[in-house]
Length: 156
Image 1 (cartoon, one colour):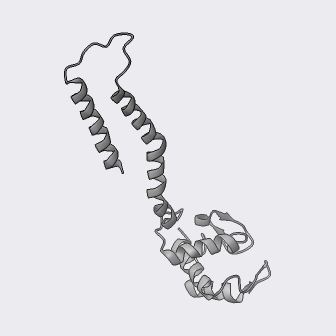
Image 2 (tube, rainbow, N blue to C red; image 1 turned 30 degrees about the vertical axis):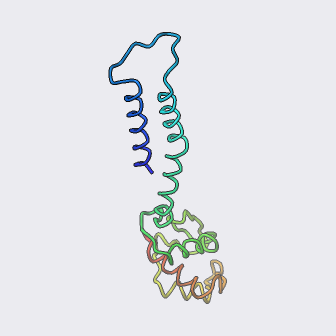
C-alpha cells in the first residue's frame, strides 16, 4: 500500500514536471496554483487521514492479539486461555499480565502454578477456608487453554 502511494506521488510529480517544465517560473499574485499541486496536496492529506491509520490498525492487529502484556508471544490455545481467565478467574486471582489484582485467590505472579494443578483446580474447584473456587468454570479444553496461558505468563 505504501509502495502504491509512493508511485502515485512520483507520478504526480512527474506529471507536474512534464506539464510545467523543469525550469521554475515566477507565479503572478492572482494566478491560481496548478492542478497537480492541489491534487498532490489532497493525496497527501487523504493518505495521512485515512491510509496510514488504516494500515497501522490493519497490520498491528495480529501482533497485539498474539502478544501478552508481559511480552510473551502466545499461541492460539493461550489466547483462548487468556480470554477465559479474563472472564472467570480475574475476579479472584492476581496476575499482572491480565491486569488482575484481586486477593481472594492465589497470586499467580508470586506463585506460578503448574499445568496439571490448574487443570485440576478449574475442573474440580478448590475450598481452603479463604474462599471457594467453583468447579466446572469451563470445559476440559478451556481448562487446558487456561493452564497453557498461566504457565506461559505467570510469575513474569
